[in-house]
Structure formats: structure tokens, C-alpha cells
Length: 269
Length: 276
Image (cartoon, rainbow over all chains, first blue to last red; front, side, top):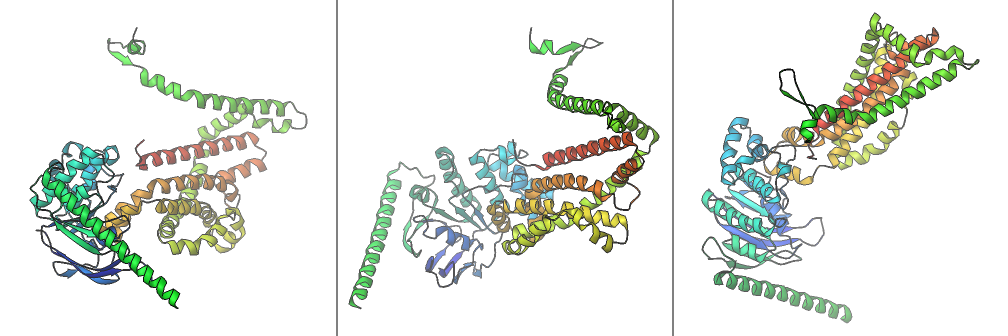
């Protein structure tokens, strides 16, 4: 069962007195919802995702999952990274079962459980091979199996497909939302690829930079699987681009006005 | 004629015997064989020169023939085995403590940046002191000669193991920690399932270096009071002018050292998780 995520006025500074990286972020993600966070590089979207995972604690405000404040990582909200980060001394099966083994489950039980997932992800025949012999796409599938093995309520994806070839990326952009829908998992993906956001999410949030804020949202009401060439897809892409550009221009304009005002104030002084 | 046919012989019952692995094994041995033959030739030449020099003829027993004869006597009489066991025992105990101290401290200074900053200068300072320089202190501090020698061996083995371990920890992909934390790893689980397997190759490389240093330090360390071990045997042979026995023991030291290094090399291969 997917979980509710509440972002309660999150502000974050990497050091005391520094300018905020994230500022007053407030939002709510419903159980089973799939949300994409897009924004320019360095806008703080990965930082926000690390907070959802409990790998980073915000300076102000908090993240709540089903009403409980997130203060540490948990296998119930799993994160997948840009690099699969598999453990090269382990087989596919051992990597996939790691979260279960950490939870104290017996090896045989953990293995039989991940075997089903590996079958679902097309890796059953590779379960005993060393992960170093797999392709990038297969490695990311193992990372996905590892994240799903612990029956997570939330799946957090930090640009997980950006290092993959176009064919594998497209396939996984279809597979991952389908799995999340089937297993009723709440999903949050961070990406800078607008097409990926539309292909995978029910809702896209746009983040601004310096400080990172959620400055726009767009509901994606397209049928699954989503085709990039469909008129609805392209229309949403245009809307998102316009909204993104407006937000960017607006922020740039606001920044220019602020800077001019500051200069005027200095000149007047 | 195919290669398979040329590399196969008919056995007594007509079955084909594949000689390819034997041929490839022999081919791999040719370069070491050239090296060993050259060394033996130089040794023989040195022995010949010494034997024919009126000022040095007394040392003629260092030559290969008397040495191998003495080695045969030592092995046949069984005198060499307790000597080897004593030395190996000291080296293994020294190595054991080197690992017990070096690996945890290495993990600590590799994982905790502040610990490394604090420990780096004192440890580098201590590392540069020859283990043999501790000899007088060891004699004063320990009740038995054996304990003093083992202390010297610990001082020789702990640094390569510690620094190699720390280097291994620093090389660990930070994402491995992040993923493990995310999957709910506790501290001991992180150590057992992530850190130790990740650094095992580096630890073994440190142990290999440590074994080399310990084996070198062992001989002079065994000059220290004890009445057993290869170092003592060399000293004894020198005092009794039994140069053939002395050379035979030198040969044994080299052979065992080479054997230990080979074992370490195999262990590194065993724990190395990099796919070639």
C-alpha cells in the first residue's frame, strides 16, 4: 500500500548562515501517486529527494510519511540512484536480497522472494551471475529489484535512467510506473528530462533555482502506456515547457528587479 | 593436420589424451626457468671464484654443491623442521596481532576523516622507525625472548596492514554506504556485508606486504637470545663455521618466503572481486 508524503515547509541550508538551498517547500503526495520533480541542475531536487529518503534532515520543517516524521532511512521508502551502485562482490540474487537480509530474514527465504521479482524483471536466468557482467540496463533492473524486495511504500528515483541507452531508458520508463501501479507504490522521480517526467508521472512539479522552490505543477492525465509521439503527450510537453520558461523568466525578471533595486539603494546611500 | 590432433596422444586404451593444458603450463614456466637457471649459474660462478681465490677459499662451502648437500642432510635428519616451525610460529603470531590491530584501526582512520587527521602524523612517524630499532625496548618490556621477537614482528606488520586497510576504506564508493543505509543496514551489518568485503583485496595486499617485511625482520630478530628459529640457526652456523649449513638455511628462508608470498598472492586472487 502506497504512503502519503507531506512536505511541511522545508527549508534547507548546507551550513549555518548560508543562503537556503531549498525554501519553504510545502506539498502533499497521495498514496499510490507518481510525481516527477523537474528543474535545472543544482536547483535542489536531489537534495529534496534525499530528505524524502531520510538520508538528509532539513534545516527547518520536516518530511512526514503517513503522518510520521522522517528522521532516518528505512527500507519502506527506498531510493534508486543514477548509478545502480550494486555490490560487485555479490551475485544478482545477493544484491537483490540485501534489504531482506538486513531485516534479518533467512537467506533461503530472502532468495526465494527475490526470485519472483527477478523473474518479473527478466533477470531470472542471470540470478547467479556476478553483477559486473551485466549491462547498464540490467544493473539498473537489479537495483530496482533490490528496492522492491523490501515491499516499499515509496519508491524514490534520482535520475535513475540518465546513464542508460535510449532503448533501455524507454523500456524502463514504461516498466517502472507499471510496477508501481501494480504494487500500489507511491513514486517520486527526480529528472531533468521533461519527456521522462510526462512518461512516468501523474503530476509534474517544477522547481526553481536559488533557492529551490516548487513554482509550478501540471497534472498528467494521459492513458498508459504513454507514447512520446501522441498529440496529448506533445501538448503536455509544450505546456510544461511554457510553464517552465515562464517560471524561469519570471524568476530571472524578479532577480533583475531585486538586483536593480539593490543597486539603486547602494547608489542612493 | 589440426592443432587438436597435434596436441593429443592416444592412450593405452586408445582414448585421446589432451596435452594442451600441459603444454601451456610448460610454456608459462619457461621464463621463471630462465631466471632460476641464471641465478644458479651466477651462484655457481661465485662459488667457483671464491673456491679458487687463496684469500677466500675458506668460504667455498657457500657454493651450490655443498649447500644442496647440507640441505639434504638437514631435511633427511629432520633437524630443519623444528627450526622452520619456530620461525613460522613467530611470524604467524606477529601477523595475527598485526591484523588484529591494523585492520580495525585502518577501518577507523579510513572511515572517520578526523581520526585520520589526528593519527596520520604519529603513525607515519612510527612507521618510519625500523622495527629492529625497538629491540632494546622490547627486551626490557617483555618477559620472554619470544614475546620480544613477536613484538618486533608486530611493529613490522601493523603499518602496511593498517595503511592498506585505510586506503581500501577511502576508496569505497560512497553510494554503497548510502544504498546500504537506505536498505536499513545496522552498523555491524554495514561492516560485515559492505565494508569488509569491499576492502578485502586491500587488506590482503597489506598482509602480503606485511609478510614480506616480517620475514625480512625475523632473521635479525631471532639473533635475540632465542635458541630456535631460522635466524638463530644462521647465527649458530656462522659461529660453528658451517657455511654450507648457513647457505642451506638461507635457501630455506628464501623458499619459505617465496611460498608465503605465493599463498598471499592466491588469497588476494581469491578475495579480488574485480572481474578481469
